[in-house]
Image 1 (cartoon, rainbow, N blue to C red):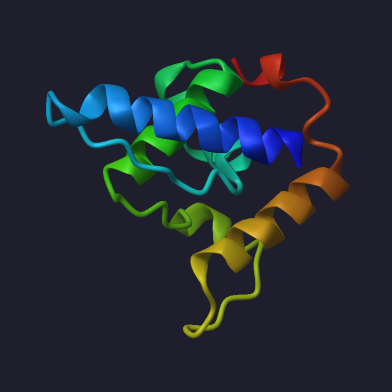
Image 2: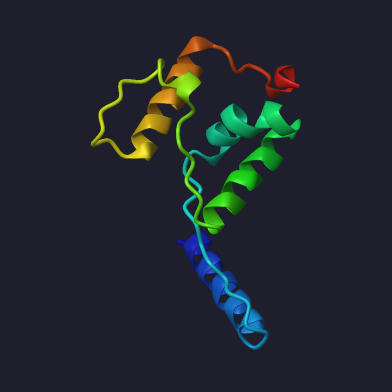
Length: 108
């Protein structure tokens, strides 16, 4: 409850600071940002895992979609009616249970 209050107060403060210069403050859902950053951007750009997750959050702020790569489609059961979040959940579970991620520094 306190965390929600602090987040609310921070969001109000940021909105009041950035209102006059005309800068928009937006919130995005950070669900699966770590796994998406790990799978899509960590190796591609040579980023740290937190930087890759930040890149995913920035892309969500720009309203860009994080679609599942064709190479990962073999890992999941896909139907056209599924939400992309469900697909990333399946990828997350597969990676967790495979034991592939013990240390993220092995991806560099």
